[in-house]
Image (cartoon, protein in one colour):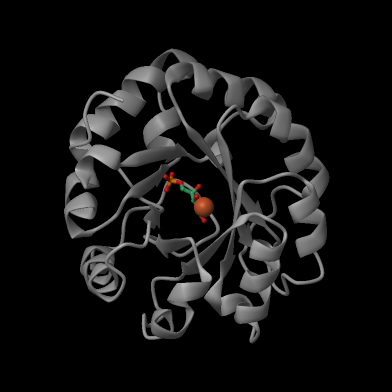
Length: 222
Ligand SMILES: O=C(CO)[C@@H](O)[C@H](O)COP(=O)(O)O
Ligand SMILES: [Fe+2]
């Protein structure tokens, strides 16, 4: 399983005045996914991108644009975000009462459907939703900001989720570092989102940072 670990740089840690260039630099450095964090200043205490920004970034993302919507309610804005051209759209279990409907709408639009769960949310709902999703996103921090420290209980949570869903891609988002990557992957994570761990040191360091994380995760030189 470790051979297929994907590192998904979070553009939240990039230079907001040059996001297109940041996406191109990450692709050049070897990134296959770009994780784009949408925050609404309501569901989470921070405000980032709207649909026009995601649409503008799309041509600069060579691989998979992995959209993480931290917005509530999500349904009114979902069509505009789907229209912006992401490959996958992840919504939060905590963002509304009708997540099942939202996940169906994402798949019906031909995108992969992701479900994110906050650190304090119990995993039981996965039992009822696992057939509706292509990706499970386990938050390693309370969402809203980059640069936070991984909540240690995340590792046991991923292990429990992996038992419930042996074949589901599990993404961990927030607080990922070269120091904890191995434990996260051994617990069952297959996608590591990383902001600060990739962007520290500037564009010249993106490639070495990606490879260091991949090596720490046990997934080869990628
Ligand atoms: O969704 C979020 C935060 O809410 C993440 O995607 C962060 O952007 C990850 O940043 P680091 O914790 O890796 O710095
Ligand atoms: Fe995220």
